[in-house]
Length: 83
Image (cartoon, rainbow, N blue to C red; front, side):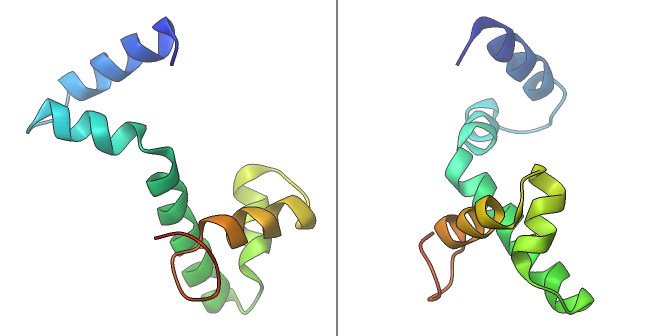
């Protein structure tokens, strides 16, 4: 991480109530954050009757190939990787 990110992280954690170490772990655990985004993509895709990569593409600004790869890599269920 870089110095600017560290300063922003410190500032946002300072605005939260609770254990700062916990929030630091949550906010900097990129794979866990991505898995939660993919959970959202899957739920939203079900609601909109489309593919999860389509929602991921809107969020991340990538085409279908990269978006499908992100979904596959970070999904949590038996269909892919994740936790």
